[in-house]
Image (cartoon, rainbow, N blue to C red; front, side):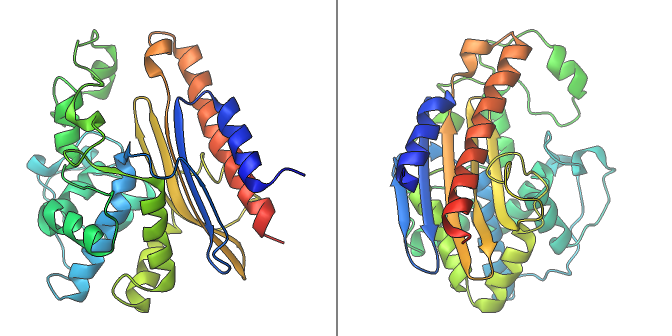
Length: 305
């Protein structure tokens, strides 16, 4: 019978990904699997989990409250994902609303509204204080879009953006957003899994704070990667991340009341090879997402019993 390590290695080999970093840890027993888990990857929207943790740390310190209301402005709007970019300026969502939108639908405007107030430097410093030495958070979402797109103007009509002729720097692989060093938002699967473990242990400030973080992560709506093949209704507190050629997912899988598994999978794939062929591109992305789902199901089957 194949070990879990062997199963995951076989899934990776058949996935079509150019690289995958995987970290799995059964939180009750400390049983762990690591495959290329120290390789750095761009975090993409998985960065929103560290931002969530720092926001709650500052809330606990009294810098602001979940019930505070922050005004939506054009200057803080971002291209999607999310919905706030489509709503009128002057809206005043609560901090709780913004943190929820940032996680469960990966709202990029909500993210920068939070990040502008907590500060990228504070998020970065907190992750390092937690011992996550391979994790670096230095860019806002707007800065990522400014790096990879000809224009990050949130007023663009998305249909026009999709139809625009290819720009030589669009989704470039040589820009800052694709770097694998401390000049970009990067991390390893092992580091992000350790953050999940700290959340589970109640070590992000205290038990109540960590539980509030888990409550938001458990409301995740983007469930086509690691939870893809899980039994319906299986709780999974997680956050995905995506850029062209990058697909990530990281969270805590609730196998049953006595089995919880921190699991992080980061991946890169050759988007350029299918550029201009939407059918091939969709098939390739679906294959990568299915590999995530197969890993999630293999982990579930290993520990749920």
